Image (cartoon, rainbow, N blue to C red; front, side, top):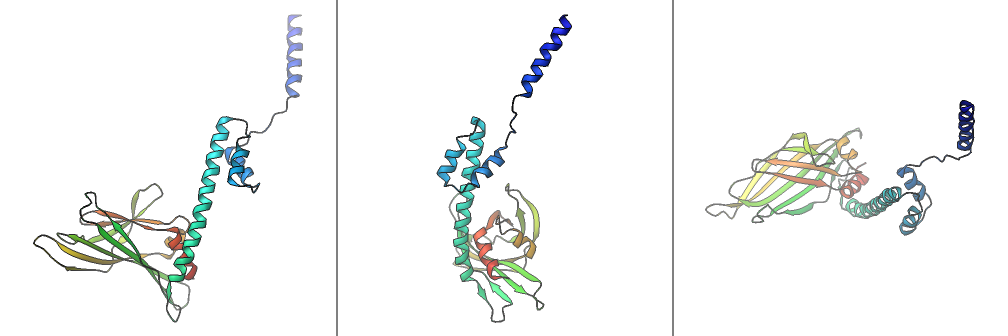
Length: 236
């Protein structure tokens, strides 16, 4: 009798459970994409996110919506800047050679005693059959020091800032000096790095980060998304 009552109770329990509607649990990515597909303003997207059922999901989706907004704004800014870069690219009369605009930065050392002027630009040439591009980046460093830096190699850096992939040894270089004292001179060091067509074009969406290695120290060089977008809008 007790066994019969247990079976009966279990049967009622299963019938009750079968009447409960089980909803599929949406991932944060799915919810984010659903909200973005509504075509609302960012402020309204956040309001929509706050309607979700759990605090954790609200928090994660809100963060993803903010990131999506920031990525959209960055792309719009990069697009505007890339149009300026494209207008400054020099093209040879035969359309086979290209020179990008020169970008200049000032790099302060750790002690901030001797700032370094860093300038660079891309230069490309196209083969006669219009199928193969050769690219190189030209770099100019100006600084005051006791001896030349002697740049010798370049490493490719990943998204996490690790710079372990050797691109190549530095190519042709030259050093000039002026205004020497008993200990220091003003040096201008010019060198170039060959870059593959695939590496540059694959970097258009994220930019290209390199580490320049010299006898004294290393420096970082960033080819921005806007620079690469604008340059390769012309170099076709």
